[in-house]
Image (tube, one colour):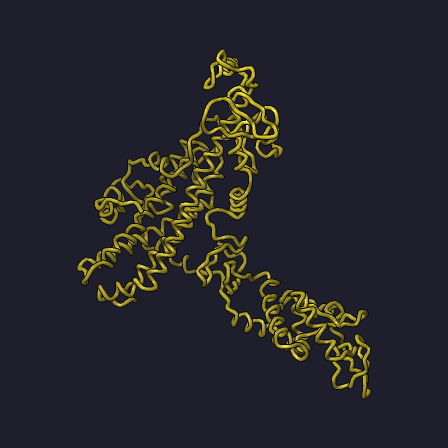
Amino acid sequence: MHDANDSAEDDFYSGGEAGLAASDDGDADYDFADHDSDDSTELLSHRQQQNYSILSEVDIKRRQEDDINRVSTVLSISKPEACVLLRNYNWSVSKVHDEWFADEERVRKVVGLPEKHIEMPNDREVTCGICFESCPRGSMSAAACGHPFCGTCWRGYISTAISDGPGCLMLRCPDPSCAAAVGQDMINSLADDEDKEKYGRYLRRSYIEDNRKTKWCPAPGCEYAVEFVMGSGSYDVNCNCLYGFCWNCTEEAHRPVDCATVSKWILKNSAESENMNWILANSKPCPKCKRPIEKNQGCMHITCTPPCKFEFCWLCLGPWSEHGERTGGFYACNRYESARQEGAYDESERRREMAKNSLERYTHYYERWAANQSSRQKALGDLQSLQNDKLEKLSDIQSQPESQLKFIIEAWLQIVECRRVLKWTYAYGFYLPEHEHAKRQFFEYLQGEAESGLERLHQCAEKELQIYLDAECPSKDFNDFRTKLAGLTSVTRNYFENLVRALETGLNDVGPSTSHGTCNKSATSKSLGGKSKSGKNRASSTSSKSGGSSRGVDDSNIWTCDQCTYANPRSARACQACDRQHR
């Protein structure tokens, strides 16, 4: 963490130059600031709204049984039959009712529920339809269709179906000409304990996986499910296992970036496109076999690897047999210099320069994205350590109950959340259109302010807290620390919540031109609740701290590939890195 000056932190709370208070002339600018009472109440209410519920295994089983009982009662059918119906209609009670009352006969035929239960032949011995052995009637079983099979054949049939996976939930009568469903009651009476347990597990999983309103938490090893209320705003879900994910795409929670951008970013991080950019930027093709060659040291005399073994000049790519002292020796090439002056190498050099710029730009954003991810993981570890033992130790040292130290946990939870948001702002910035200069400059300014405030909070929760953990007796200024950390947590939360909303709306307050965007800065700042001294323009300093890298390519003469984001010359019909056609 970066050290911050004590005076700056004092100003932050006292309303000084770097702080919270508004200037006399009333102009507003972005900063970490408390909202008025109405705004604070609104934000608190927004945070408390939860459009999902977390379901444990017990909750899932209870809800499943409730749905089965409802359908069984309303339709006057047995519970196993109700279970068969719900499985076939993806556990939608309303859809079962609609279809059943619209055409009961058709529904029975589709799901395999005969209207009348057919009894087995009333003979002392009955022939099994699989092994054709005659067995006592008491050892035979049949589904609602009445086709009799012996217990051994039933167990083998059921065991094989369960071993094949969740398809066993749609099990039908073994008779090839029969479509009668085999319900859970028969599974429980005929299968062994292991198969019954597997079947029950498949049944519970189908209740979540077949229902469009529920999903499993995607965290490894997590057994919680989530029920989501559709059309209720944010897709962010925080599971009881502490993993946050997006309901829509099941990737890690990624506000303020949309799912499509996340998908492109993840693909880019794992794809070969950046390898191609690196090759274009740092290598040249062998003039004979065209394999890329990297030169990281030595003279200009290059020998390609076997079986090619072609010897050539690194600069002009001509055969080395035509080079020597007369062309400049081993460390120069007169031919290259003269040809370059005549413009012979302009296109290849420009391609290499563009590839290098594209790679540098991607590296700039990816490194900062990864750095915030690393910081978030460390913060999670620090939070766990604090909850496990440090909070109890602090309680003993400062002679305060742990219930009064919850403000520290809240601060660390906020740090973890803000690191996640800040991480995804770099993916947002990477895909921000190059031609929207005003939005890009404004975005970099907001991002820099967010980083600055988060660093203050992180330092206070990490380094300043350590002072009180190392103390040997209660500290007189601990209450001041409480006020400071709680205040930092509050203003950081408010700023980041408003930042996320601003980015999700595409920074609509910023106009198409730089001057227009600058004029709207005050208005947008006010919408985020920021207040600071007027007349200070920190955008330029913040831009270098958090924004995109500068590039020596004229933006009007290039187009960016949608697939690999390689910067191509305007005249190119296809991407020179991945060959994707330009639309």
